[in-house]
Length: 164
Image (cartoon, rainbow, N blue to C red; front, side, top):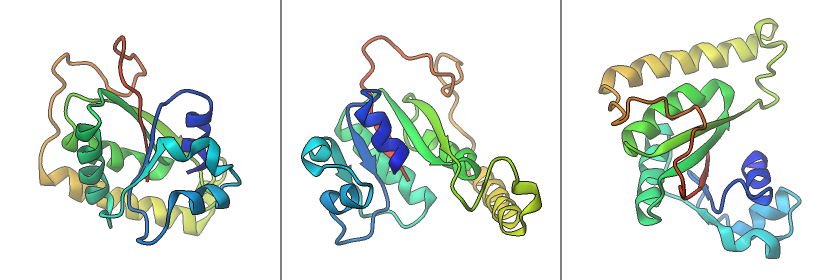
């Protein structure tokens, strides 16, 4: 969530949606844990409580994107989880530009993951889930045939961030 807050603070997005939050957790509590002042960011953050897995995160996010009429968003999630998250989110919001913002949590260090059994197991597990998810249904083709992760934004695109 820290990267999502940074993007919001830096003006690279107008809103932050955090999907799959535990029921009972409120925005002020998350901001306190993240060492941010609630009065500075409270207005721009919305929490989603319905999702319990990646596919549900994408569906919940899709509902938020449609409610807010967004045309682009940044997906913030762990680097090892990004391919599957992008796939599920593209299915949920075809035609919306999605910019990947991968983060590298402690459990998956970019520089030494090959030598850490826990990181390798996490990666293998995530890859297996990716393969299973990819068999469920094909990805929709982009209308323009462009790669949605390149960062080429349409003029006037509404910005949002999704953090899983």
